[in-house]
Length: 119
Image (cartoon, rainbow, N blue to C red; front, side, top):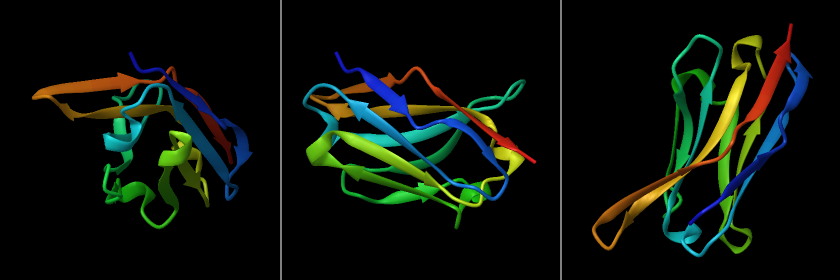
């Protein structure tokens, strides 16, 4: 069983920065794809950024050029550096770990961390 623990959320003014961290238990972090998702009130959960086990990244158009996802396999941790934050970035941010192992997919979620951007 994998547990994901997010941290780093909080309240910040528009234009500010935050760095989210997600630490994973277990031994499959390095072979897994990691993602950050967010869900604003009344909206569906959406992908923010993703990094594969090989280090390839992709981003939602709304955050390109402002957010950076990275991973440290030695620490079993994935990060989301968020710069130039906007009020529309306000949401609960969730960490996701997923992949394919022994022909079976796996998918784990963290509990979420609140990010609030004031105008």
